[in-house]
Image 1 (cartoon, rainbow, N blue to C red):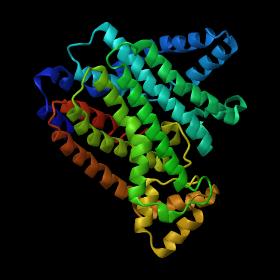
Image 2 (tube, rainbow, N blue to C red):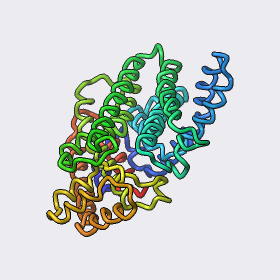
Image 3 (cartoon, rainbow, N blue to C red):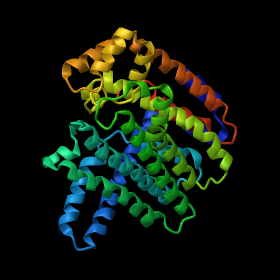
Length: 368
């Protein structure tokens, strides 16, 4: 179905891209992105060394290598892909280098969120390795490394984009997305009652959507595409206005997939352990379970959800299965995918439909 849609929305400026294989483009962009990673590390560590604190520079280099480049890079790659789609006639060596560097700023943000989130959630594994706060028993002191990563974003943007027309817009969008994501984290923590037994009455779909929009959708989808648009010199407010709701939908779709993978995915493939149930997170599965549960089944959820006892976690997961939530998720996945495709077709401001279709294709039925 997607291939037919892609063919329908081709425009002359994007014919070459539309006929390219998305995964091949993604792999090539990742290779290109990795090629500038040593330069990004050098920029950051040299800034530290210039303060005559070489011991800190060594630590920062180790921390960067451990936390930043090992993931799927889907957000950074989305930025590169979006920029290439928006400026097919301006892909000079200098421009491509800049967009790769900016993509690493997105990944620095991702690593910053992960370090802090893993401390809060007491997670054990991230990307197949011990979470950073567990590395050499760093503990909660790892929070300072997370804050450093956020600062490094602005240092890199200032170093490479200061003086360019997009400079202030890039600073603004990164600051705005971090602000919104932090608010989403706060809302999620309020929902889990800050590690105490959660109040399941709070777990409504409206609340879940608010958490997802702030905590995940903005930095997963809005940030990469918006940053690419600013770098491409796009100023038309209508373009941003039409892109935003579709990107939010794709971001919500991505997060619900994450909820599924956390609960039912293979940890060896996903590269992280599932703490959603024991942490009492407001996920798509618990919200739908509460909508479907009988009074007896709700009692089980009230007793077991948000408790770290392995047996109670098993009972919650079994109840999710008993309520046919896997079938519900499968139906939701197909309906949402088709609906987002329709909404993409309705974009009429000159942005290439292929940009949104390929982003959607990249996450559709993902397994990690």
